[in-house]
Every structure is written in structure tokens, then in C-alpha cells.
Amino acid sequence: MKRTDFEFCLKWSILLWFVSLSVAGFSLQRNVTLAVNNSRVEDVLNLISAQTAYRFSYASTCIDKNRRVSFSVKNKPYADVLPLVLGKKVRYKVSGEYIILLPSVSEAKKDIAQKPGIPPLLHNNEISETSERSIDNETVNSCDTFFLKKIAVPDTGISIDECHRDIISKNEEKMRTRIATLIVATTLSAATISAQTTDSAMLPNKFAQVTFIYPIGTDGIGSDQNAYNLSLNMIGGFTGEVNGFEVGSVFNINNYGISGVQAAGVFNLSGLKKRQDTNEGTQIAGVFNVVNGNMPVQIAGCYNSVLSDNILQISGVANIAKTSKVQVSGVANAAKRSKAQIAGVINVAKTAKVQIAGAANIVKESPVQIGTVNIANSSATQIGVVNISRRNKFQLGVVNVRDTADGVSFGVLNFVMHGGVKEIEFATSDYIQGGVSLRLGTRQLYSILTFGSNFSENYYSTGFGLGTKAMLSKCFDIDFEAVHHNLYGSFLEMSGYSGLVQFRPVLDFSCVKHLSLFAGPAFNLSLANEAGEKINPPYLIYKVVDKPTFQSDFWIGFTAGLRYKF
Image (cartoon, rainbow, N blue to C red; front, side):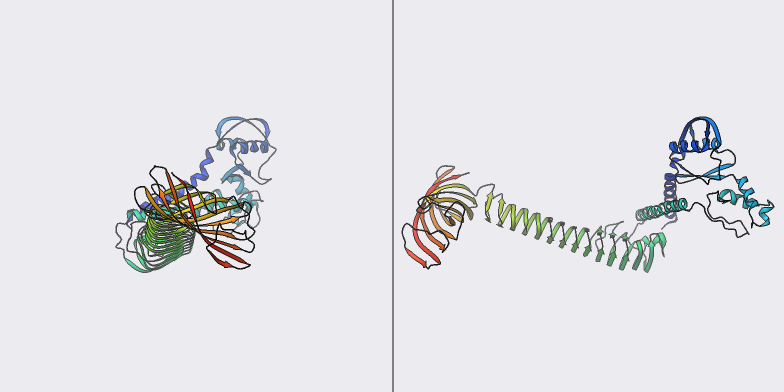
């Protein structure tokens, strides 16, 4: 790194330090408005505390709390008001949210001179200028009346303990928090500045580097300008490139690329400075991996992201890639192009050869989609509960929706937006005298949902079937349909099994836009077990099965009716 870059980083670090200190000192400008007359010092201090939010800390022998004071101030800084309250024998020190009351320096010198065990240098008041400054700048503990940090008087070995340990502990904890914040801010700012000032990925190669947390390491702030074969980061590191192995307990950051293995407890970030499409390796992270470029293999507990090509992504939550051969995630996969996407919840792609999801697949073009809900602009095969496609060759599901009628939909409800078969049928036959049916699908294959009744035997029926149409002329079609009916003695109640299977080749005549007439033979096969309803055909051609436990009869009947096309 150039010297100017280092100076720039240093300036930023110093600036961040002063910003952190300014947060603590921001409240020093708080003002006080008071008018007291012959009031106790302790009461006045409480009033100042209420207006400034500072808390006063002092020993009971440090000040005379019952001393009376009188004065009036309006919107004055508290620093101008405290001398009116404390007098000349007491001074103060601000520490965080506390104002510590202390005897003045002259009082402190007198008190030290009176203490036993103090060297003659102090007893004779021969305190050097250096020692006097030490006493003034540090805080001395006399008769347990001072808030103090440990001090050492030169050449005496004197060490005096602290008397407000609880307050000091709190202040030290705040200071540790500020220092940690400063280290993180400095690391990020230095990393960003370094990334902005490095001009080339042609980096000098070094065998190894060890970092506690960037930039505290063997190569310091310059580690982002080097390529390493081995990179060990106790907490987290920032390097130029890694061509081998890199591990960090929390994070790894690279300016350019990674070839080899990169493992982190929380995250890996590669390509911060420049997109790198020549990476060859594997990233493993407890939370997420992000690469500006390509990365053959990524494995993460939560999230993987590649802005270029990828071979394999495995994550607990989500994978994102420009192109990927295989994506496997617990929740979601997203790619511009992918060969295979497997997700517990959803897959999204512009093009994908195979999509398998527990909930939904969404793609512009895909040969195969398997999921609860499949949505595609163009898809060869969709298998799911709900399939939606503009153009499709084959759909298998409960509900199928397609825009055009140029494919096959196999399901209970098959909707075709433009063209196809959408009909309501009112029909009669030799055994089911009255029935209503719904036909949905394409001419190649449509589904039939039917409900009917045998009035003479008081039977009800519900059925499902499939059909196909063949055009004979402009007005005539021949329909081949197979339908299975369940028969009930009372409405929708079955004591056993009774069924009727029909095969119906019927002629459909349609010269009106929305209406058609149809008629044709019906080949009937009845099926009933011992507990089922007994079926009495109009006449019998062949007794297929005649056992006490099962009966099956065959006969040929007819069907005819009216269809409304919508």
C-alpha cells in the first residue's frame, strides 16, 4: 500500500476515534437554570442532577452536605454553576454519566502529607513539578474521600487502591465497548479504502499469513495486497487472494478470488475489489457465502450467492446464482440458468432443466417441473397439485391451467384459456336416466366430472372419466369416452362397493356456436360386491362374474343429450 493510503487509513481511524469520544462528551453542553436561597448543598446537587441527567458520586466526608448556598443562574453551563455550589475546596471530574466530587489539589497535598508511611519527600512538601502534575491529573485517595484510579508517585512505589470500584467497572465496560466498536469500524474502513486503492489483481504471492482480526496480523493492513497459499484468521481476515486454504472462526474477506478451500464460522466474502471469474475451489460457511464472480462449490448453513457460474450450491435456506448446475436448499433457489434446482419450498429461474420443490417452481422455460405448484411460461412436463403454463406438452396434476390447447393435461380440472374443451352436458342413458357432466381440457384429452341418478331403482351416482375428440367434418366430431360411476342407495352413502364402467363412442353434432347434440352407444360393465347395492341391468348380454361375494354383468345400452360450450 502507498504511504498516502496508510495515512488516509490512519486519518479515518483517528476520526472514528474522536467520533466515538464525542458521543460520550456530547452531553457536556447541558445547561442549568436555578434560583436557590439558603438551600442545602445536597438539595442543590439533586436539582442539578435532575436537569442534566448526571449522577453525583462522592464520599460523605468529601463535602459538607448541609452547607447553605444562595445564587440564581439562567441557562448557564453546569460547569459554571458547580463552583457556586462546591466552593474552592472541592473540585469535580466527569466520568461517563457521573460527576465525581473530589477535594482540590491543595487539599489533597495536605492530606497526603499527613498520612503515615508516605516518604519524607512528600512530608516536607518537596513535591516535584512532575509529581504535582501526577497528583493533579490522576486522582488521589485520602481517607476514602476520593474517587481514584491507582497512581504511583515517582521513586516511592506508592500504589493506592480505588474506592468506587462499581463505578469504575461500569466505565471500563463502556470503554471496552467503545474500543471494540472502534476496532470493527477501523477494520471495515481500512478494508474499504484498501480495496478502493488497489489497482491490480497481479499480487505478490506469500506462503502464509496469520491474522487475529484485520488489520492485526503478520502483514498488518497490507494483507489485502498479497496472495497467500495459507491464510489463518483467528477472528477474521482480509486478503488479496487465496490460492490454497483459508480458515476464519468468524469471517474471511478477499479483494479478488479464492482457489482452493475457504471455510468460516459465519461468512465468506470474495471479489470485494473486482469480479473474479477464474475461481476454482469450495466455500464453506456457517451462515453465508457471497462471491462477486464464479465459485464451483458453495456450502452454507443459510445462504449462498454467486454472481457468475456455479457447479453446486447447498444451503439451509437459499441459493442465488447467475448460472448453476445444481442448487439444493431447504427453502429457496434462484438462478438465471440452472440445470437442476431442488428446494423444500420454492425454485425460481429463467431457464432450468429440472425443478423439484415442496411448494412451488417458477420458471420461464423448463423441460421438467415437479412440485406442489408449478408455474412456467413454457414447460415440457409439469407434475404437481397445481400446474400453470402458457405453453406445455404435458401436465399431470389435480388442477392444470394452460393458455393454449396444443398439449395434454391429465387431471381433475383442466382449464384451457384459449380453445380446448369447456362443456356442460345434460344426458340420459339406459341405466342412469338423468345426469349432468362437466368436461374440461383439450381435444386430445379432457376430464369428465359427472353426477346422475337412476330414478327407477332410486340410485345416485358420481363419476369421473376421460375423453378425446376426433373431427369428422366441420359440424361433426366423434368422442371416445370412458367413465366410472360410483352408485349409492341413498345420497352419497355407500355400504359396500357398486360401480358402473361405461365406454361411449358418441357422435357430436354442432352447427351452432355454443350448443351441440350427441348420441351413441354405451358399453356397460357393472361391478358389485356382497355388501354393495345390487345392479339390475335392463337386459343381460354376458354374466362376467357370478359369485356370492361379487357380481359383474355386461350389456350394451345408449346415451344421448345436449352440451353447452362456453
